[in-house]
Amino acid sequence: MAWNQIVVVILVLILVIIMYLGIKKTYAKGSWLLPRSAFEVFEKIRCSLKREPCLSIYPSRVKQGEKVFVTIRTIAAYKGQTACFTRDPNSCPRSCEIGNRSMCSFNFTASLDDSGSYFAFIDINTNKELDDEEPRSESHNITVIS
Image (tube, rainbow, N blue to C red; front, side, top):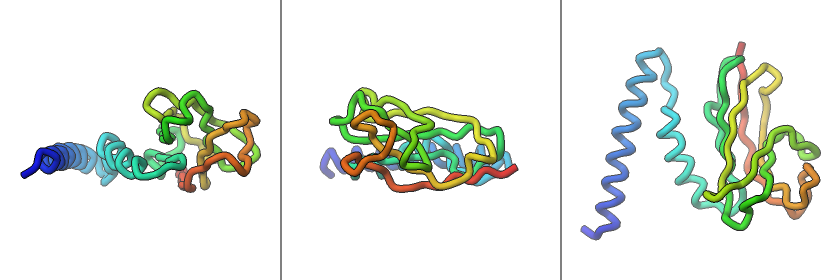
């Protein structure tokens, strides 16, 4: 076997162990939610294949008052730019600055008003609005239950 195949096999085994331990732990609490560590690994792989901003929301279905974790990944060229997380292309209610690892993240406490479809965009011209030349992510839903 080539070294790169050995590395892939080792990484897959580590991921399977992390998932097993996390799912076992969350199942004991009565939930089948994928552990956040495993979710982050899957999202990092998914987002590494994209040039446009890649939005990750964990979990996407929450109870009111629980934390929602948002990560926006992009290419290195956008380091130092503001990434906006919004439902409305004409506003930027939540944002973060793209850092050294070409990503930024934040969390917020979910309220019933937070249910809806969200996307992220890189605010290149700093006007807090989505313009034609600014890259945007795909949309993701958040469902908040009481």
